[in-house]
Image 1 (tube, one colour):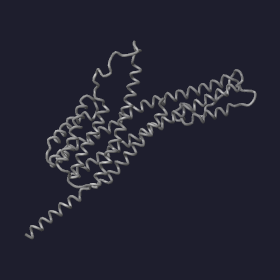
Image 2 (cartoon, one colour; image 1 turned 180 degrees about the horizontal axis):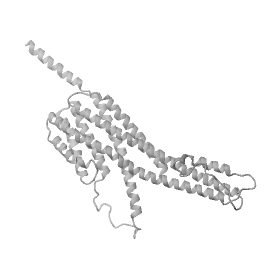
Image 3 (tube, rainbow, N blue to C red; image 1 turned 90 degrees about the vertical axis):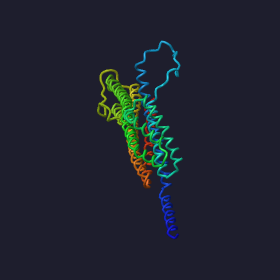
Image 4 (cartoon, one colour; image 1 turned 60 degrees about the vertical axis):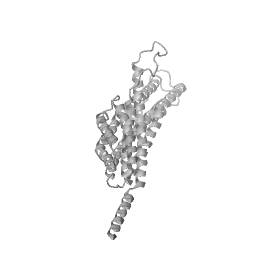
Length: 358
C-alpha cells in the first residue's frame, strides 16, 4: 500500500513538473513576436505590389494606342481576374503563420481538440495557397505547392497529438523552403524599385545639366558689364546649389562661367540666372532625395531578409520545442527588433518616395 502511494506521488510530481516546464509566458511572447513579423511582411509585400502596378501602368501608357472612344464597352468584372501574385505571396506567409500556430499549440501541450482546430486553420489557408499558386507564377513558391498539399493532407488526417507532431516535423522543411523563396523575392522587389528610381534620377540629372548649360550660355551671350561684376558670385551660388548632386553629375564643380561677345550682362540677366540657380537647387535636392529613398528601401529589404532568416530559426526551434521546452526569449526579441527595423525603414522609404514622385 505504501509503495502504491509513493508511486502515485511520484506520478503527481512528474505531472506537475511537466506542466511547469511548459513556458506559457514565453510562448505568448513568441506568438506576439511572430504576429508582428507577419504584419511587417504584409508591409513589404504591399510595396512590392505597388512597384509592380507602377511598372504595369507605365508600360501600358507607353504601349496603348490613343483610344477611339472615351469610354469602354467592357464591364470591369466581366472577366474573372487571375490570382494576384502578391496576394499569393501573402497567402504563403499566412500559411507559414498558421503552421507556426500548430507548432505553438503542440509546444503548449493543448488538448487534441485544440490541436485539431489549429491544424484546421492551417489546412484551410494551405488549401487556399495551393489553389492560388496554380494561377500565379511565383518562382520558388510554385515549386513547393505539391509539398504544401501533402503537408495539409497529413494535418487533416491527424487525430492524435503524436500524429500532429509527426506531420509538423516532416512538414517543417517545406515551410522552410517557402521562407527561402520569400527571401529570394526581395531581389525582384529591389530591381523594380531601382529601375524606377534610376529613371527618375537620370531625368533629374538631365534637367540639372540642361539648367547649367542654359546658365553658361546666358553668360557667354553677354559681355562683361562696365560696373560691378556678379559672375563669380553667381558661379559660387550655382556650385552650392548643385553640390548635393555632385556625385551624379557628369561635370565638375564649380562650373566656370565666362562672358562672351554681345550686350553687357545687366540686372535682368543676373535676375534670370538667380532664378535658374534656384531651379538647379530644386533638381539637386530631388537627386539627393532619391538617394535617401533608395537607401531606406535597401535597409528595409535587407532587414526583411534578416527577419525571414530569424523566422526560419524560430520555426526550427519550435519544432524542437514539441518534445522539449525551449527558451524562446532571445528569438522573440530578435523577431520584435527586426520587425520594428523593417517597419521603420519602409516608412522612411515611403516618406522619401512622396517627395520624389509627383
